[in-house]
Length: 285
Image (tube, rainbow, N blue to C red; front, top):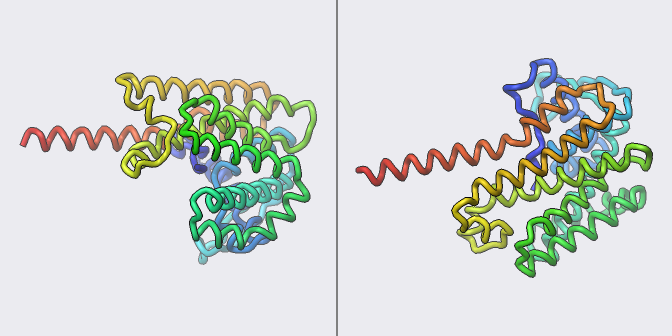
């Protein structure tokens, strides 16, 4: 369900893209050092955005390092790390663990059983350090699973649970910025959930799997309505972001919120257009 909150590379300056990659690589390296290869497997772009946002807001001083990795074994990669990287790594692994636990409870997937077994000990340590976040992740995932079993089609309700989970992760500490960070996380979380449902719609229909967008997709104005909903969510998120006194890496953050989050949507639209053109060609033959 993650991977939607990333940069739009063509619209980003080269120096800014390199800096973004350095934060991403820093998160990957931190996951490796703290949790090994299994930790690295939980890496997401979404938590890189959280690092950038919290680093900018709290003006954290980052360490710049050079490391080789399995993906880049020859040339050393530039990596930026700070206290927010440590926090994001912990949240990354905690999310992965509870997601696997949820998959096992719901579908009894063998991969989920073995995966959660590998991460369990590490996740327990993180839960002890961050009980607030751990409790909300478990609570909201249970609520989402309940909605899925009920075949819930209330988009606001089910996406709201995911938003509630994300808002908790964005609150690194309870201070004057908590309210705004919660709103950013909440609306971004709703956007992620709905974008994921939009992305999976055709496959879910074929496999007869749950997807809250199926009833809406039968309506003639479906595409217009889902785009309007997605725009509303990211507009609310962006409006809250602009209230923060972020100066560091603000161009990267705006690139993500105003362009990058739409990468997958544009790709889906392109595939739909190609498929429609192919169908028209076949009909004309």
